Image 1: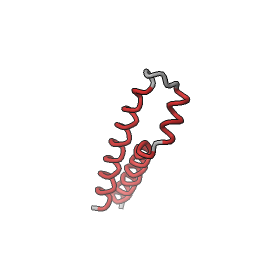
Image 2: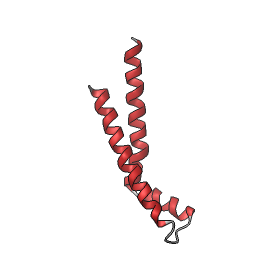
Image 3: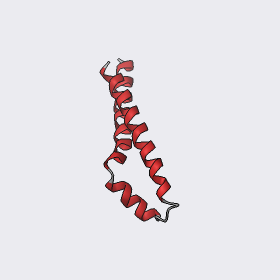
Length: 70
């Protein structure tokens, strides 16, 4: 049950972080360059949810596959 909770939490984090990052892509047509965009993304804590969610999903899948092999 903990593995599924970790998986679903990771999925939620990934969706939230990915959505915010895609939303911030609207700053590029407003005159922001790619370097400035990446520096801006680096300064926003909600954009770190995407990699954290991917990490949670990966750990949950590794734990699930480990339980299937036993």
